[in-house]
Length: 246
Ligand code: PGA
Image (tube, rainbow, N blue to C red; front, side, top):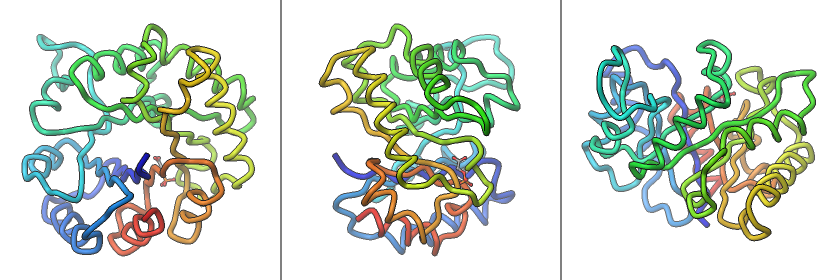
């Protein structure tokens, strides 16, 4: 399995020019990758322009999608629209969507199902808030989020462990704690599916990843990659993170 490094640009940057420069600079720094898949998730306004360009070194992902196929849903974008725009991935279940847009496990489950049905790959974010019981949160988010999804679809799902207290705070999760969370996630998946189910499942870590800590997660954290927010907006920093995965 290749390492996967995902850039979540969130609601940045504010101009097309800045977005284009960032992509160009990243591309210059990550030629000839062998062991790493790089997925960049810009806001919708810039996403499809870049995805249509078919850059060889990178894949593109959306930060959200609606679960209906088509119709009267003002302001929304369907999974098929993304698929038809050469977008390969979609981030779902991100804590910011759960917090600011009231996304429930049930809604996230619908979004995951409709995304998989058109052939999109899903980056499914899970993780506890400060003070919450990690184990309980992971069990409910994963069990409800993957309700009705078959084992053969797990190869198209990447679970991103993102403890909410670590996102954008500079307080990244310790390596041992990350290992524990990854083990818990795999155990939950094995319980829901079969003993072998977790073998095809990629697990990422996200939350205040920087070039100084990225290598540690990849080497000792038991993860197959990283979901990077703030540090993905600085080309030099993001390139270093990608190189740590190679
Ligand atoms: P951060 O964000 O790297 O800025 O903490 C990660 C994320 O929200 O996916």
